[in-house]
Image 1 (tube, one colour):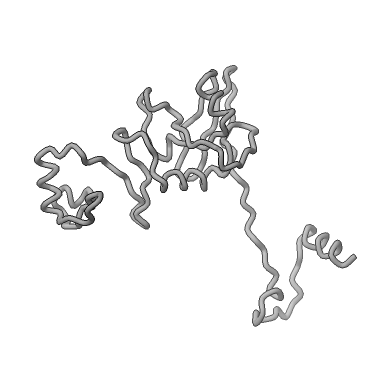
Image 2: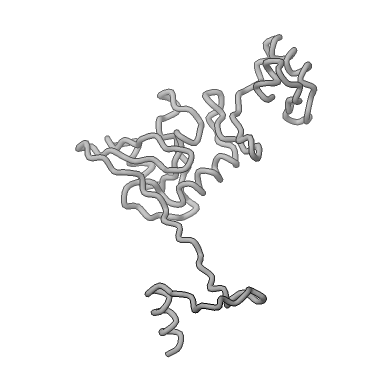
Length: 185
């Protein structure tokens, strides 16, 4: 149920698992009567994707798992490049120590570094919506978050059929020139 609807400021319907949408008035009455099966889910207003499920749920939704996999792309431990699908989505602050199930408290860890996090003095820092966590070593050294360096694709205009041809020759980077030379040989 949208929070503004719960507060009576809008009449957006709530969603009841296994049933579907229910009127806001019915949902407000259920909450007021102490329905214990409701839990808070923070969703992205752009697409409805679950971003946080608070302290009431330990298990991750598939949406949150996908979000973390896309944000992190690999094990977040310093220097680890493990990109396998075996990586775990782990609570940075353990659930039993008050950690919440939200994107700032979750990260991808390979099985080796997941165990190391739980059985050593390596300490993760909070993540953000767009960046994985940094880490502090047992000796106190801080390691900044390692974010994937996504390089945008550069398409030369002449590679697209019907693309208007530039009256001036396009400048190419040294890398592009080297690639074109290697293909010509």
